Length: 356
Image (tube, rainbow, N blue to C red):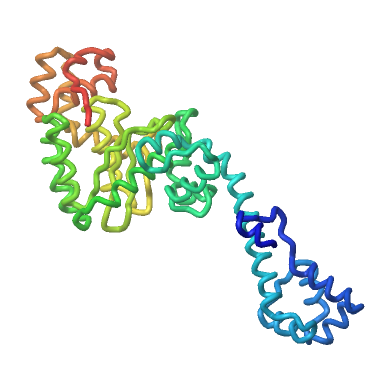
């Protein structure tokens, strides 16, 4: 390599094994590989593999070649080092080309707008930035670190990589939030206080809800949904003493927010710490159990059954029932909508918009 090439950052586009140079030395002295093996004390097989690029020139071998040919060991060591560096660089460039297809499945512009990655239009930079965002050496490893995003979802249009990106933003935000060590007992005792907060506006209940969760070892993060995610919420354990509840603002109604919150709370209290969950509408056993937990804690089942058995759903009856069970009126309306006891849109004025 010339001085000029070094100055302009010359990078060869092929990796030439040092064995080719060794073969030139052997040929120049009219040697055979067998001759060189005898002179170095190496096996003929080892010499052959070095020449073919299948075996490296070790530092010990470099010293032997110095004795045989009179060329410094550093010459042979540098040839090997440059070869390995070039191989690694070319492989890295190939990897980036392969990972570009994955990068195109990730909503990079939105992640950049939110400040999680640097804005760029260059594919190579996108791949490198996304590796850092996910904390992986290759984008191919994303399904291994976030398997919950790659489970089967009820919406065919769900992008697994977009969902993984949304969950990852939650992890990064949650990592900066301090909590007490997780206490199941304390979390269960906090449920009545959570229910009381449903009566407040978002600006009032969110800070308090986050504070109460943190006191039990649960970090609450609100992350606006990303395109093609369709997620209401997610739950995972960041470590054995810290759980994360992640909620989206995809549907801007308080009753949906609260159902999603209690649903994720159900996962924490009912299911293994080894599991992570993303609420995308799937009806697995665990998701059904979390739905039941949310339904029963928001509106006690015995009182709800008694209420719907009368089959009289007026504004006054809904208000009276909501006051009786001490829950937001919009949550009752949302439950009646879901259970098809009233038509969609009925009493919608009682469902408060959620914004944060």
